[in-house]
Length: 207
Image (tube, rainbow, N blue to C red; front, side):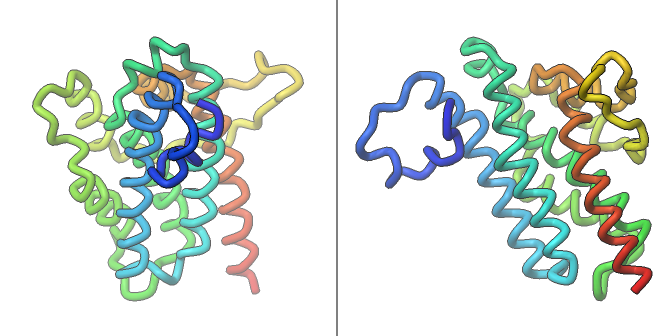
C-alpha cells in the first residue's frame, strides 16, 4: 500500500498493475478519505472559510499523511482487505470533530452559531451517509461514539523513548478498534496536532 493516496486517481494507475494490497488500500482507505475530505472542503468554502488554515493543517496531516501511514504499517493484508471504509471515515470524523470542539473554546468562525462544531460534524456525517449502510455490523458503536459529547483529553505527554510511560486516555480505545489499530497510535496522531493548533490559536489571540 505504498504511496496509497497517490494511487487513487485513475490517471495515475495507467502504467502499473496495482497489487491486491494497493487495491484494498485504495478502495478501503483512499476513496473514503477523498470523499470525506471533499465534503469538508465544500463546507469550509461555504461557511467556515475564516478557519480554513486550521482545518487544512489538521485534515491534510491526519487524512493524507499520518493516518494512511499507520494503517499501512499496522494492518496485515487480511486486515486491510476486511477494513471498512465507513469505519475509516468515522474515525477521521470523530477526531476531526474533537479538534473543532477544542478550537471552538478559543475562536468562533465568522457568522457561526455557538454550537458550530457540532453542526459542522453533523453536516459531514450526513453528506457522507456514514450511518446509512444496512449491512454495517459496527453501526451501533459508531452511533454511540458520534452521539458522545466527550471532549477528548490531550494533556498526557508522549514519551517516545519510554512508550510504557505514556498513559493512553480511555477515549482512544473504541475509536482505534473501529480500524483495528492499537489505541496509542490514535492518540499519537491526535495529540501532537492538537498541541500545535491550540498553541497557534492561543498565540494569535494574544496579539
